[in-house]
Image (cartoon, rainbow, N blue to C red; front, side):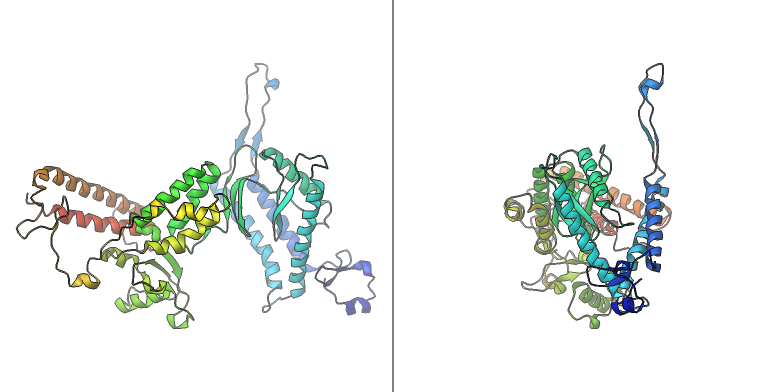
Length: 502
C-alpha cells in the first residue's frame, strides 16, 4: 500500500513499517497492510505455476532389474501428454503470464482507469537492482577460487531473467549449477520473490540485446527445440526468403554444427536470387494498411501500391485494415522503394523483373551479417561478395513499357534463334532434333500439369472440398502465388506445344 512521507508522519508509522524503493517511493509493508494488487498478482503467479506444472507433468515409471527374479532389463517409460491438452495448458500459462504482466503495464500508463507511476517505476528499479544483485552473487560465488571448475559470468540480463555462462561443456553439469545458483540467490530475496532455474542454451548465439538463438534444453538427454528471440525467423515484416534463409542457417550452425555448409547455403541462395531462380512467393513482403494514404506522413511502399491498385480496379484494391502484399521490381536508377512496389499477381501476369539487389541489400544482408559476424572473420566479404554475385539474370517484360510497341517474332524452340515468317517451330539447324525437342516439350507440359494439380489439390484440401473450384485469394499464403505461377507456366508450355505441326 502506497504512502507519502507526510502520511507516514500523520499515522505515526515507525520507519520499520515503511519500505522505501530504489526509485525513492514509499509503501507500507505487507505485515501492516497488504495491497490488493499484490494479492491479485500472487493468485495469477500461483495459477501460472500450477499450469506450467501440469504442462510438464508426465507419468514416469522406473523399473529396476533387481526387483525381478529373471534379471530382465527394463527401461524408463515416459507417457507423453495429448498434443491438444499440451496446447491448451501452454495457452493457459501464457494467458496468465500476460495477465500478470498487464498489471505492471496499466500502472505505468499516463492515461486510463488505474494509473500509478510510483508502482511501475518501483518495479523497474527493483528489477534492475535484483539483476545487479544476482550478477554480483553469481560472479562472487561460482569461481575457481571457490572450488568450481570455471569462473561464472553473467552475459545477459533483461527484465526478470539472467543468463549465466558457467564455462562447462556438459549440459547436465550446467543444469546442476543453474539449480544451485537459483536456490542460493532465492534465499537472499524477500518472499514471495524467487529465482527459478528455467533452461540451458547449448550452443548459444548472443547477437545483441533481445536478439539471440540457441538450442533449448530442459533435460540433459535431448534438446527441446531451437529457440530464437528477436531474429527474423519470428518477425512478420520480412519476406519468406529471409525467414527460411535465417532459420536454415541457424539449423546448420546450431544443430548440424556445419558452419562451412551454412556459408555455402547462403552463397547458393544469393546466386539463385540474382539469377532469377527464386520462387516469387518467397519474395512477397506483407504490411498492414492501417489508414488511408493521405494520413501517412511519409510515403510507404504498400500505401503507394494500394493507391495504384485502386486506380486500376477499385473493386479489388485493398482497404484500410487489410494486409497489402507486394514485391520490389526493377525501375529507373535512383527510384525510391515506394515507387518500385508492385502487386505480385500483376508481376506474374506481365513478367515484370524483380529487383534482386534490393532484396540482397535491404532484406537479406543485415540479418545474415548479424548471425555470421560473431562466427566469421570477415562475414560481409565472405557472404556478399565473390563469384556467386557476379552473374545476374533479369526477365523481360511481356507487354509493358517499350514492349507495347515492339514487333513480336517467334523464336526457335531449340536454340531460341529468331525464325523467318515461313518457320513456326524450329530453325534449319534444329530440324534434325525435332523428335527430341518435341518429347522435351511434352515432358515440360506434363511436369507443369502435375505440379499445378498438386497445388490445386492442396488448396482444395485447405478450403475443405475436393469437388469444387478453388476460390481462395489469400495473398498471405505462399501456395497461392506458386499455384498462379504454375498455372501461367503451364499455359505458356501448352502454347509452345501448340506450335508443333503434328
